[in-house]
Image 1 (cartoon, rainbow, N blue to C red):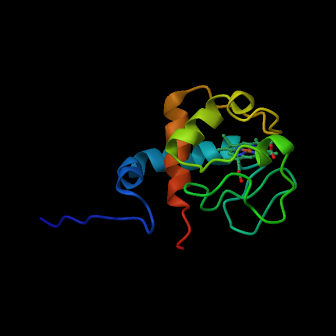
Image 2 (image 1 turned 135 degrees about the horizontal axis):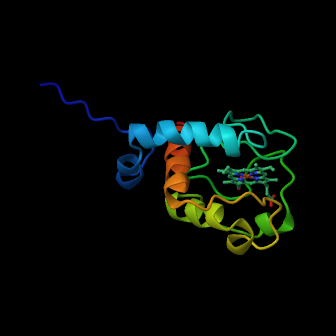
Length: 125
Ligand code: HEC
């Protein structure tokens, strides 16, 4: 039997473990449906509606050059990881007062799938 272990570049073991293929696949679909209108996952491509989310897991908040963040997001001062992303997607304006992003994801399993998908969009550093 052949066992292949996949470690994403730069991923901590915890994040790598949470990136299960089925969750990430479902997350890709959810992302297209709920986030894709405002966010690209291609670094450097900001839509008029939102900053790109390529490599967002492990990235500092409000750090995409050339995107005009709200004052609230500029003051958020955190690193996006599975915990901070989950809290932000559950209740954006509670997690980051003053943010312009209003889209929340009520279902915890949907949030986890979206974050798992975003973790596969990590950028090598
Ligand atoms: C209607 C447009 C819209 C939709 C839909 C949307 N967002 Fe956003 N998002 C924004 C805007 C605008 C910002 C910048 C917020 C600010 O500056 O306060 C943002 C910011 C973010 C950030 C912070 C990025 C950074 O660089 O710090 C994350 C993470 C994020 N969105 C994730 C998501 C996810 C995941 C979804 C889908 C569930 C989603 N967004 C859906 C408009 C949207």
